Amino acid sequence: MAHKVTFSVPERSLGREDIEFVVMRDGVRFGTLLVSKGAVEWRPTNKVYRQRMGWERFDQVMRESGRKV
Image (cartoon, rainbow, N blue to C red; front, side):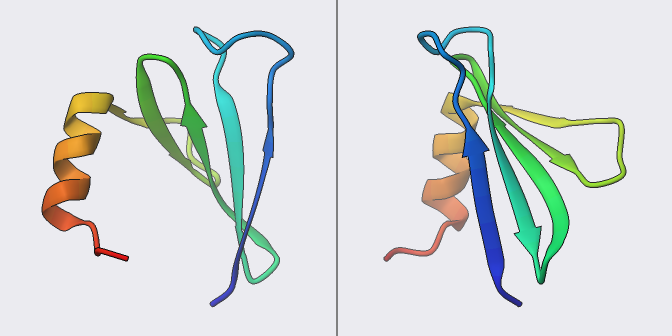
């Protein structure tokens, strides 16, 4: 299960405009990770909704559940 991640960066400083990371798995779009000044969001492929997590919560989740590398 190989993942390919591409992204596009807006032509201005990061603020309300998200940076989008398109995540592909085995050549098929898996979802989109949106990073902004205020939060990180995950939008699964073929879904309308997004899952949003603030940076403080993201830090907590990564410390508790992330794998050390």
